[in-house]
Length: 348
Image 1 (cartoon, helix red, strand yellow):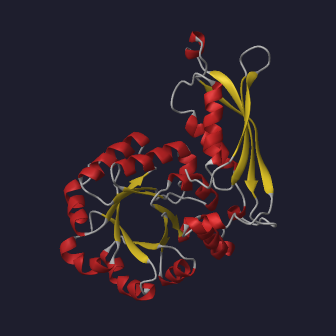
Image 2 (cartoon, helix red, strand yellow; image 1 turned 135 degrees about the horizontal axis):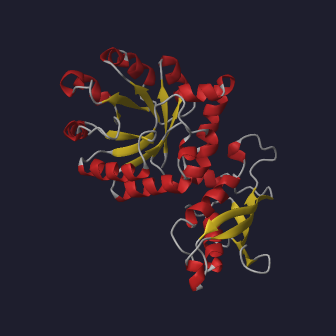
Image 3 (spheres, helix red, strand yellow; image 1 turned 90 degrees about the horizontal axis):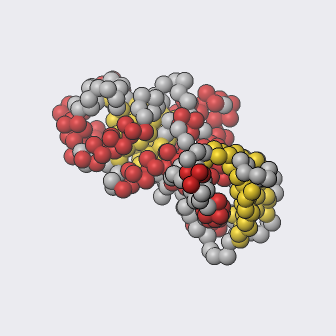
């Protein structure tokens, strides 16, 4: 189950987090004075959510700060600049006494750095890793990196038996795009969400909770009432790909055009927010994720893979996929397939 984390600033934010059903409330502590205010946070939580503490390695000392730890569920540890060596000996000390999550700053690292840090985190027996950024003007994680790259990070963390978390200036529309990768934690910040829409902060919090169901079975039940279907369209989506069975097609990329029509179960007669719709971003992300694995011999294979990917979403009932090569005479050559869901619900 994906847990929902909210980085808070004060006692008022504790109330906001609890009222909107966040699973983990996280508070950043940059100095010892901040630790002294934890007692009021513990009291306000009343066991209604887990508590995590985001800290920097330099100031936190287990010998002086250990008394608070039994009531803290997670320690989230900020990384320094990647060129500086992390104090892995201290991180191992943390991991022996507390569930420790290493925060990887996406503003200062590359995917190549992520995989090195994942391996080191596994060697240090940390509980997990989480992509984050700390700068006020940081771009959204899904703008910094392709969703497929983010998904690979989650998969590699899982292979190494690490919990995987995603944060980094996320917005509600990002949730359907990253949720299929089953990250263990998805994180938001009260401060950043207030900057997006201060007047509708509560509404945005409720939307985030709706988009990350507490129980996947409940989410499936939600689409069982027959309200008909809507058709989601992606037209003339063009990419340069290595595709084709001929020798000359292995030597250079060619233009490929995708057209997709997806029939999805309608769950509201009056769509008002992201929880009521099937985002076209899911289709675009699916295509991008399937074409990154190298040369593809047959467009028929690619079309079938795209259709299978899209049909794996519970709300999808039917999909049409058309894939065309644009650099061959006549104007275009390709294939169009139609596939219909015949089995029960499935997840990616």
